[in-house]
Image (cartoon, rainbow, N blue to C red):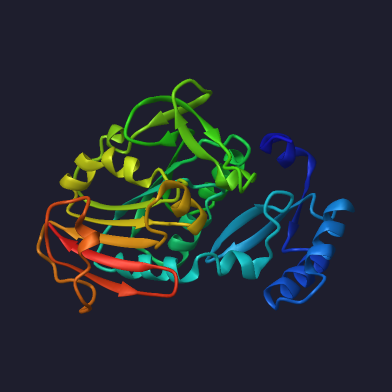
Length: 290
């Protein structure tokens, strides 16, 4: 079912159904039977709903038939990662967030709910099945936004999204350059030069290529924060680190956000410079002075 059809045919409800909340609570508590209950709810059509939650002061819609989340799932999504990202944004003013691999807009919505330093969002999402949900969620935020229905890389052209053998979900699809129905673009093609820039990358292994396609944007920024979400299965497939990271670069020589030991791998994509790290359970924050 397309996202347009889903929005017109499915009921919008306030919050998750009670049975879904029970199933998710059981799953988080690692109780037996959670999976069976979820499959039953899906079979009975209970998940054929669009649940609306309040994230900050904005409404956030979740298509339960695609992502069976309750409110706790939404607010705790990559919680440590989001918190560290917002912490890195503290010195920023009127920043532009490039949300690459935006899906339904969860990351953008959570960041805007805890940081007032984002003034504009440019969201990239090539999957047409989630695009209308992303558009709706972005429109509920109190800032300007632009939705780009393209994949992000280091070239402009076309390609296709392919599922890995070990994960057949839409979330795991990665870009294969060449013939295909998906349009591909770069961050630099948005012609944003200067100011405060935040970049979030969750594109299933294409993060380095996306950074190559953002070199002019990053070099011209007054300050830049880069958040890279990494998943172990993706890291195994591409042979790179499975550590999610946040990198903050500054042209002004601003002090690092932490005082922890040097992390040389953080500077691999930019000019050699001092770099420091703040480690969380699932993320690392790097501050790099240009």
